[in-house]
Image (cartoon, rainbow, N blue to C red):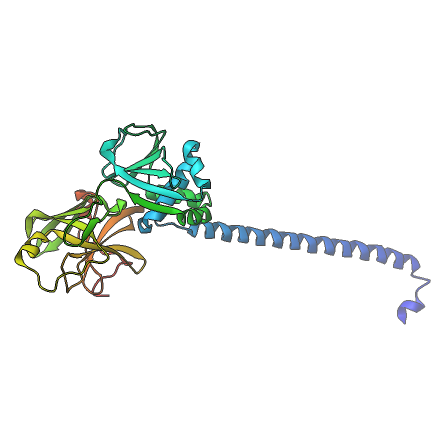
Length: 352
């Protein structure tokens, strides 16, 4: 009522106040808009940081890859890094990794083990790679008994980190489904006593490993040498000469005899019956005696641990019904001495 009585007298003031009110409302709207904008920017920054953190959390553990996944990883990495003849392999409906004898070729870095040919199924490839220790060497333009052009080198973990950074995990998984592994190295001939051929030890496991551990107030050293199909182990306390076990695949229709002769037992003394077992996210190579009926055999796995801030591959040695860790080996004697009796929280010890 008071506003109506004084309306005529305060007309000028009313107009003036209205203008002020509009300016105030405009400022409030502007401030609100700025706050909203700042809130959006802050939210966007948080989202961006969360997205970046999520991307950094993605990790592909090279030590856990199957042979098919390894073939896919190497092919995709070479296609992206080197292009050329490797780039054609990404688009094929099939991919065959064929194992050949390295001695049949003249590579700049022959490595130790096989010469791996990557090609579309049913075709002859010109793209190859070799392996020495944990490093792969890549070639293209390879001809029979030739060396081809050397392109570069990388470890499997470096390749895994590369495709994660390039956001190529989806393509990696799709390519893995197309991969077939074929052995033409001449080691698959039919053998006696149920042996259908030689078992190929995973490439990342091949090479020499060393362990050091305390035993009755002394340091016990063990050396393992993994070849293509053999395991040599030497213990400076209990097995100074060392023993070699050759791994064979067993024919599907073979049935071991119920009663073994002494000749059969003696002949199979150095034969190992292998299989790949996954336990708690780790792929183990389980080795039992050829005619072993009881017990669990030995377990070996290549695993990655963080040591002094670096990713380091270790050889996990385990045994028993619980696949309990009983030793850790390293690629150098010096590292084994430094890490003597070191335990890792993510591994399975009997006390756990």
